[in-house]
Each structure stands twice: as C-alpha cells, then as structure tokens.
Image 1: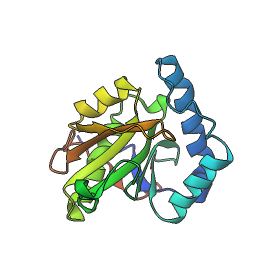
Image 2: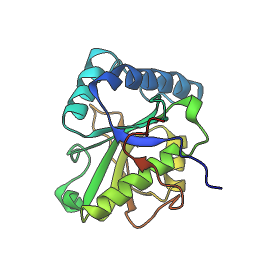
Image 3: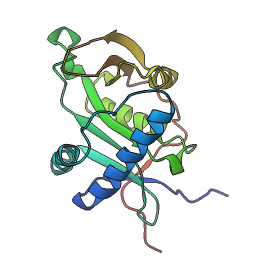
Image 4: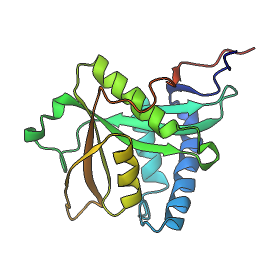
Length: 190
C-alpha cells in the first residue's frame, strides 16, 4: 500500500513571511550550537523580510508545506551573484539556489536533498547544466553536507563585504533521491 504524501512544494506567498522568518531565526540559533558563525550577522528583521518579500513577489521563493499548510522548509532561486561567479563560469548554464532552510522539527525527512533534486530537475527543464550554491566560508559542516549531495567545490571567494563565498556546483543529472521527489502544488483538502 502506498502512503499518502505528507509534504508539498509550492510558491511562497506573502503570508508565509512570518513562517520564513521563524525558520531563519531557528536556523541561526541551531547553527550557533554547531560552532559556526553563519547568519550571526544583523541581517535579521527588516532587511531579511524585504529580501524575502522581493523573492516572493518575483516568484523565486518556494516553501515545503504539510497537508495542513505548516511550513517545513524553504528555498529560493535567484540571479547569479556577481561577487562570486564570473563570465568565465558561464553563469547562464546554471540555476542558483539561495536560503535553503529546513525546520528542525522536519529534520530527517530529507527535505534539503529533495529540494536540491527539485532544483536539478527544474534546471534541466530550463536547459541548464548546473545547480550552484554559495555558502558561508566557515561552515565546514554545510560544505560536507552539500558534497554528500553531489556538489563539487569550485573555489572559495573572499570579498571583504561578504561572509559567504564557498562556491559549489552539481550537475543537473545528479539526483540524491530520485525515488522520493517533492510533489508540486497544493494538498487536496479532504
């Protein structure tokens, strides 16, 4: 007997901003317990909300929700970050992921891997070759996580005004969990 899916991926909406900020705040606290200074900057509050609202308005932010609408995770796609990726990297060949956050209460559902797989499938549909990320330079645990998902470290950039800069990419054909994709859309109301 096949189980009923419990997670759905849908575009984020303005009313999701409080849940997104809660995910971010929770991630900041959790990261500090892991010995990393990631997201320890003062970007929370108004600036982060404005960025997320822009991503939502532009259709670039997505959320993973339960059947009853609880937000479990988020990811955004965005334009190439020119602080890191150059013309020599052929930026048009890649989809760029940002703000992948999974709520601690949803840990173990492999939502991060499934979101990256979704991005790989989307990038392939768009005719791209890569999914690219940049992460906090000092978060070696996160680097190892992405490498486990098939990302290859490209290089590390260190612009003085940024704390991220560990650059990695994964070929779109690489999938971590092809047998367990996220369903796209809204859960059916019983």
